[in-house]
Amino acid sequence: MSNWDGIDEFISVATAGSFTRGARALGVSTTHVSRSIMALEQRVQAQLFHRTTRIVRLTDTGRVFFERCERIAKDRDEAIALIGERSEPQGELRVTCSTAMGERFVAPIIRRFAMQHPKLAVSIELSNRVIDLVGEGFDVAVRTGTVNDPRLIATRVASRTLYTCAAPSYLASAGRPASVGALAGHECIAGSAGTWHFKVDGQEMIHRPKGRFRCNSGHAVMEACISGLGICQLPDFYILPYLKHGMVELLLEDVQPDDEPIWAVYPQRRHLLPKVRQVVDCLLHELGPAMNTPRREAAVRPDRYVP
Image (cartoon, rainbow, N blue to C red; front, side, top):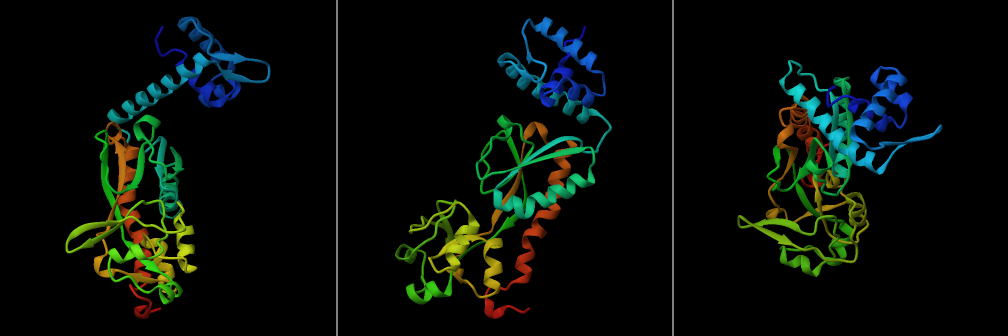
């Protein structure tokens, strides 16, 4: 008897929530699955499921056992994929990204990638929370800023420009700031970033925005800016469509910061998997052009815009 006997059946039933559906997923009979799990329970000397005529659910012991078995089974399957001849991405690909960038750019790219690889199942979690890729079992994250976790590998796949702007109505009433220091005398609309970035005489400079309005949604910050509530600093894809139509004006262009890198980040132990290698390559080739499209459609100032 192998130590693996019953493990795949157990994982399948726990995932499906049913002996019948678990057996169907494995392509075996319900009787085979039932006997395999009973033998497994006898071997580990613990009950893994609560069984009634209507539901099947994990016991507390079964839940802990399932978490470990699922992780081990994934590692086993990935190890086989690594040394096999197969180069086709397969299995589950778990990707995470910030909500705004994910909805607009990353999710469409990953969707097309999934359509090209029918053996791949994709799960995308869009969240502004910094997810622990290793601890929570993710394959790839798309992130901005710096990556300091030694467990992770980061590949730069794109970049974005941070612009500072305000609506003409606000500038008419409050004036135009002539320097980063002058922002202290203005209403600043704060987003999810606690600091704004500039580059003065070749040196990085930060400003901590203060004002009456703060929101962790870039779209909401942009709407507040357009309404004349104050000054904001946001990535290009928020600002350029409104700049194109003269609804906002750029500020402090002479101290604009360097473009911010965008990284595909993945755990070191996963970087050789075909699904990870190929989706990172896909992001490298598609994300930059997708994010730069608005920049080709809008000039830096509205009076330079050529329709």
